[in-house]
Image 1: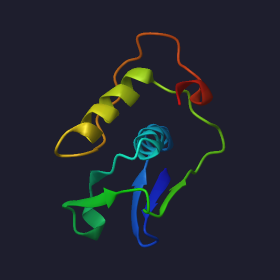
Image 2: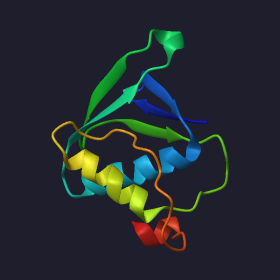
Image 3: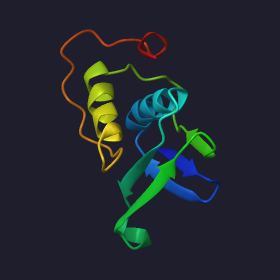
Image 4: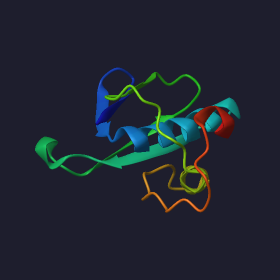
Length: 110
């Protein structure tokens, strides 16, 4: 389980594979100068509900991974996440679709 940390004090645990895909979408949007909201459900142990943060070029974000291996990238999942990030409601984690082709390396998908 990895951790997404926003502005040093807002944190959420996200599975490493999902966190990798979110990181790729977030960094791609920020490279294009496109700010967006990011929403996730909070764990019941901290009260539940959901939290939304505004992601922009000046945001301080940390993607902390539990594992040391870089997961393969599912291009369709990247596209689905990017679609949500560009919608009015902003980025949120959607389920991973079954890959329709050979997984791509992270460096090739950026």
